[in-house]
Length: 123
Image 1 (spheres, helix red, strand yellow):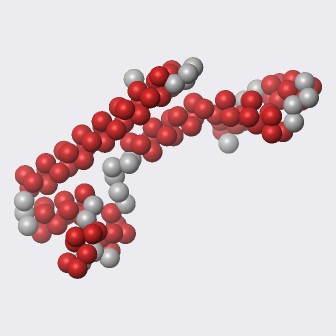
Image 2 (cartoon, rainbow, N blue to C red; image 1 turned 135 degrees about the horizontal axis):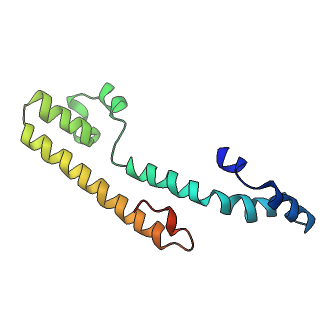
């Protein structure tokens, strides 16, 4: 809503005078004005991609479902807390962070190369 309220109302008025309907105004004015916000939110979601919500899995977690229900966080919990394999859990956490960084860099490069919107990439 904040991004939509930042759009100049004169753009909508001039489009209405030119005969543009509501759909045409949304496609030609609102959507292009929201693209920077869409890119930023997309980057934030990609950054959180490797971080699962492990609480729900952990609540239903038992020895019967270890084969099919393991995510990084439950594996780290089981190996680190229950079996005291701290080096192994550190390696798993490092892999998770490096994989997330690589995915984030790829998506950031795609956004940087997209037409006219490269200024919104992180670096």
